[in-house]
Image: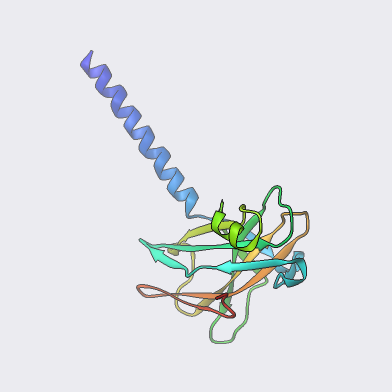
Length: 177
């Protein structure tokens, strides 16, 4: 009897470990690409959209990008926003014609909803394992790929990240105060 119980418990533990490993891989994997020509590139101002970016960080080999896309004076139903990275060679400034999409989780941001009078379904958190991104001679322009209301918009954030040895460097133009 003990042998059967022990074998069943071991199988359960191994299965749970495999499920956790799959969740981890899923959470930090890339989600394909978005062709720039299929989207309208915008800063969001004309659509009453305000991207708010927090400082990105690297933790245990995973790049995290967190922020919000405020939809001022707009009702929001289903939200379809993903974080994208547009690779750009540092030496010549040439950018690829596709954004690499990250696994993006939507977050409720009650504090921003109260402060700006927008819907609280505005936050996001994206993550990707560094091993999927090139280091050194490539910088990544951070964009928000928005298909919430059926329109295809790629919203510039003013943020650029570069993976460097031991972490990352980033620049954010026109950061909100």
